[in-house]
Image (cartoon, rainbow, N blue to C red; front, side, top):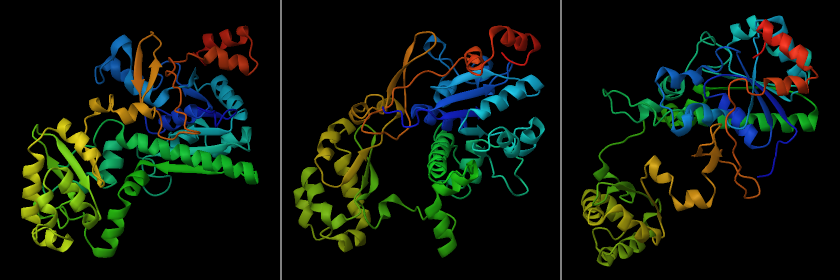
Length: 405
């Protein structure tokens, strides 16, 4: 893939997934992303494997480090030391973007806030990712995607029946990767603005903002119509039975979304083997299907229950209206469309193990990105410091002091 951001340097001072994954997207696009980690602890997400909370993959692959950190260089710096802080400012002076998820008081204490970094580089784009935004009474609070994006942001509520326990988000990092991609887009826009005007801006994003953005249509409806969740109701009472999920013989599901039902009804029923239904007076048009929706849904239930999902796939591929199999994450590994478009890429770990990982969803000139592994803790400290002009004696002295890894 073209290095759209070749020549752009990002200094990233962030941990976990939400903000670091923005750096990984920029790295995919060609940026030199330098991840700053504490010399001893490193990114706390590295420790999840050691604590047993996250399993280690074949060859010791830590998938929750690989996902948000692929393609970066890692430098171990103790920012509480004067030497470590001075090196950070030297790095910032060479960078286009400073990316962090440290909270306001921590940024102030470590002297890495906007004014501190811009004293070293007035043209740097300063980027902050947070839980709840930079203003307001809770700006110092932390958050994770399942609590802040999914819970407080409203997603958990709108899919949960009143009185039931809300479900957790669909999987680890769900809200984080959405937020990270959003931050990467904001950085790209800020770089474009600086190129056009010479002005370096501050970029902000939060898990809460991403959460309410993702349910923006429902929030708008709540304001206009006074209800907190979209009506769900009985699936057999859908006014348009062609917007529904149908179970197959092997207890799998097909999702139909055919908004223009009069356009697609005859084609659908003909290709699924019931052409007699095209002119059936109970279902002949959208008005009739709405009036007889329960009977129509039962009829379609019986038809789709007659074959397995694999038997239905080639049939539904011939239907003009939109439908899709409801797939598992494991099935995505072999989905022909996923493979044909490069939506999975091979990565070689530090131990030599090859695994597949999902790249960011943007492609340039029809080329999927080549992914490289996440760095080991402090793997590139010496290399980066040498690029700053330090010789090995100076680097060894810093290591002895504990300022660098």
